[in-house]
Length: 479
Image (cartoon, rainbow, N blue to C red; front, side, top):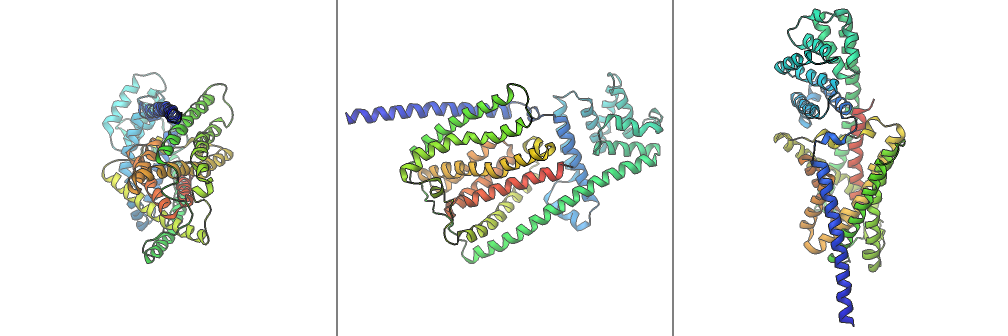
């Protein structure tokens, strides 16, 4: 009877895991289709408003840097793109959005960008086409022609220039640039002073925020270099913080089965959450609550892992993933954290430099967050709790504590780290630059887990990375 019962059990388990694998692969393909099947802007609410904000703040930032001291301009250009490149990229983004949007303001924004870039032939063709279109395009054509082309400025009465610009454009960089051009040509000193002062005020606020962010990064970099020096004196040995055992005590086959089944249940959970968010009446804060609730998709996997992997080995989550530092572990955690943060930043800088050299950049839809840009303080707070606290904990347990550890048993440290980091990057759905950045982070965090025996350093690094990205969005796009 024993010879019959064991194969029957394996067949049952294999069929269940196989079905879960089909569900998981179908979900991954669906996500890939949604991510890459069309323009990225189609998944953004109010993309015209979002892109105007992003491009406007980018141009305001460049204007602020242009007025900064020479040494500051030099430092900023080392870590950022040239203004001409920003302008060209903004035009590409607007051309992409213009293919799916019919908002007249979008065409006007694109014409202003082309005018600022000196692409006057494109501006002329656009203005001529607008003359044959219904209102308000003929009026926009007169404004653009008077600002950037050899048109008769009498076509736009000097006394009404300011009101005309204010009527077609919201406050911001686009309005001020068009007003500046028109005021210069019509001799309207009052309008010129008003537009110049408005842009200067925004630029000064952005420059102050940039300086604060850079100052924090410089302090952290200095602390990190000191910590790296300490590690070099110890011959590069990271402190042992937790008691996690790698390879893990469970079999690789059991780990794969749990990951596949838990991943399938998580995919089903995410689909249910998504449909609950799109079916029925719109509710206040529904989007941010649903976004936070997506962390529930990890819960089935964690429950299966506890039942099928940890409990049979006599372990809980704390012991298995080294979440309780040993004697002196908190001090070691701090040293390891700041050292690894510096390594992470150096790697990210190298990726940014390489991407600029190859002419690559991250698409704006990959990092724009509507809730951080326009949400109420409550929405911003909930979003930060989700991004900085919940997501790092859940993702590190799943991708490093379970996925990397399971692969570690079968393939060894290097291949397990590379494979888990690649899957981690693919799961984020970014383009080439975003993939490289996330892959680098996943690789470093897997190595940190292996060397320290604790998920606390990866969790802290993940939380800090998300916090800095969120603060960048808040400080640049809000206010």
